[in-house]
Amino acid sequence: SQQGEEDPQALSIQEGENATMNCSYKTSINNLQWYRQNSGRGLVHLILIRSNEREKHSGRLRVTLDTSKKSSSLLITASRAADTASYFCATDGRGGGSNYKLTFGKGTLLTVNP
Amino acid sequence: DTEVTQTPKHLVMGMTNKKSLKCEQHMGHRAMYWYKQKAKKPPELMFVYSYEKLSINESVPSRFSPECPNSSLLNLHLHALQPEDSALYLCASSQARSSQPQHFGDGTRLSIL
Image (tube, rainbow over all chains, first blue to last red; front, side, top):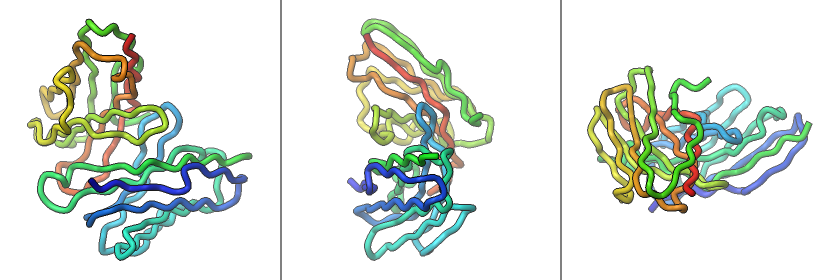
């Protein structure tokens, strides 16, 4: 089964620094999504990048996708304490009923220290 | 506040109890999902409903029984659960098209005694 694998598993930085998280996956995808989960809460969708896109921006977020390497990165610039959360990449399957199925990576726990 | 509402937020039940988890959304989404999440792990898909019909069951034990009574509601009926079923149960919804962002509720934290 395909599954995103994030690295690092945990990242601790100071407020104002940039945070970069990476995700690798195994099979062909339609798109890749990034989600954030604050402790004790549900997941929040951050950004979706399609397989024919290489880079996408949303506010302080920058996502890249390299389908030849089956990898993606999420960059958070000028981090804030409120960015402290777990970040998951999620991939879908190409075609058929698997289009509704998201497979989540193991996640990166980001801690932003004030 | 999330747009997907789950109740209850916390549930403690014995292994012989029957209980139900509820999920509601009013975004007009026609795809709804149940996930199970253990501590420090990613969510694992359990069920997907599309247009109120079950479209994906990820080989979930029959002690979990989903129900989608209408386009806004999703239930998960629980019976004879095991201690290893203790987890955070997340509901999500999305537009019923391929590759859509999913909107999650804050989950029900379930503890089995």
